[in-house]
Length: 162
Image (cartoon, rainbow, N blue to C red):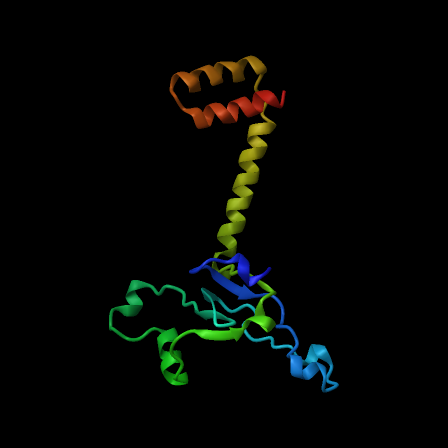
């Protein structure tokens, strides 16, 4: 995905290496060996595009309140102090414009799967129930009387599938 598809504040990551450096193409190096694989899978906050560069900064998982009780710096802040880096990471736009995606937090993968399974079960129950058309019409009238339009729309969809 192009870096131009993101807005400021999006949490993004790299899915593929950068484009080959232009100087390496003319020097006879194998193109695949000269591609930068930094930031693949790393969580980055998109800041924007300026001065011909993609500007990002490392995203840090919010810490638990118990971690900050002693007033210690976070791991990300500690790493910034050690490396002497402050400010955004700038990447040349010509090499880094493609190969981006929204970051998926690996700690939330199980939650995402649970939600998908629950949605599947809900849909399965809605569309494969043993309700008769008359029962659904009665439920639709009750939902409209109660002004529960979301429920009414779900029931109407099931009626349309008859």
